[in-house]
Image 1 (cartoon, rainbow, N blue to C red):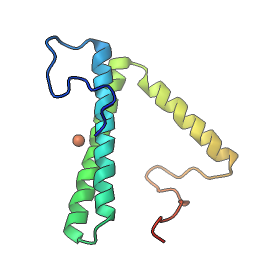
Image 2 (cartoon, rainbow, N blue to C red):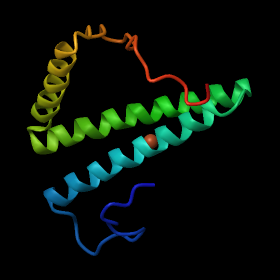
Image 3 (cartoon, helix red, strand yellow):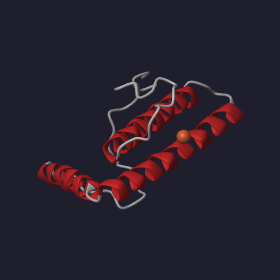
Length: 119
Ligand SMILES: [Fe+2]
């Protein structure tokens, strides 16, 4: 689990957070959700048990929803987070165009991959 700045280490502080601290706490929550998603997907990929795989992927996708919730909250708290996300997306799109890679349509997985590390 992510522990960048160890805010509170399980203890509630004796005062309310400032807005800046709240934003940092939400960023840490995003990292925790991403960490959980990675863990559950790795476990899903490492088992052939159909029910376990289905449950793990379902929960991993729920964590991805939580990432979206926290990122939306960060946007509302900061007022400019979407601008930074859009700038980053535009930079990657420009690099993809530079390589002649077509941008996948929304919801479509990219057609290229690094492949399986097991094969
Ligand atoms: Fe979650």
